[in-house]
Length: 462
Image (tube, rainbow, N blue to C red; front, top):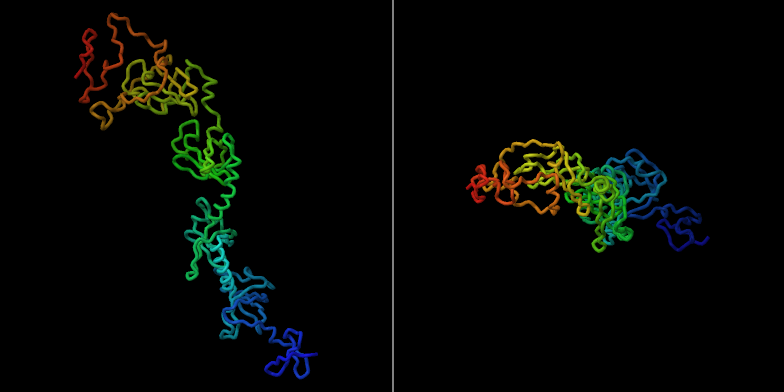
């Protein structure tokens, strides 16, 4: 058999065609064991097969004259790992050569450092291209999560999801994709964002959702956030807003009174701004309109019970059905003159009212307490308000009564007693619009006795 011209230091020749694995020595063909040893230096990454797993180390055959040893703490970036959880017998692993011979003559390797070097190259490429990287959540720390990328990556809690995550422990052990947003090799610092990945995915479906939605559709979503002016609903990738005025047919002080984050609700699409990708939603539109019950059930002149919900300077609001309030004007509270509605009613009182007018178009209801037969509410004594202005401004001042746009004839019904005939003996003068009954004198004292009927009306108390 022909031999190559290459000779070894001891004079042996490499057999041609054997790829250096056979030698000719003194006319005999013998294996070249040195050719099976992979040449490497400290710091190189080598590949080997796991041949033994002990409690504190792993032996790996890398084709060297002795097996390499990977200490348990060099297997993974995780803390206190069990070697049998990290590798299996027969598994091929990459390891970085730490030292070719330690004081005991052993070849010391590191699996985590080999992975570290490869990971850094992969992470640097991902940071440059903007591609996401995948890793497993291995720890929950103050302020976020630790992701195993071959390098310990930090995922801040604010960037775990699009919305705040209340329980980070739920992610422990999960594999997640993140984008690299900060990288510092000298400090081994990698900052990640899962939120960036989720937002990018959402961009692709937002337009599809907008194209599918049309005003008038009733869709299902989940309450994602509650604010003072309304509630946001997640519609499978895009948020819509229910304004506080569209939450209920009845008055709502704050959205949290009727909704909680995470609630699943059916809502109606009211409007879509496709350019700004904004969706207006209504919750009350999916519920029965109580005003329709009023129109279908009640008529002018009907008497029913209600609850006083609010007392204002010009009257009192009474709720007759859930979500339906009517106004009892101050002139309809009592058959006699009063200065302040609180002389007759307070918030929370249960009263009987008569329907004077139903304006279904403007959703307004005019009510009366004084016209209910057999109902005579007692007059209450009011304590003077602290800090009341000396000029008479306060609850009894009607100068700033808002325009209610109610029909004038609802306050002049047939059942109101007619004014006494002129000249009737002992008749009281009917109240006229104007200064017939002053509310209070300029110094805050009660008004003087009214002038006798035969005296000139201009005789007013100073």
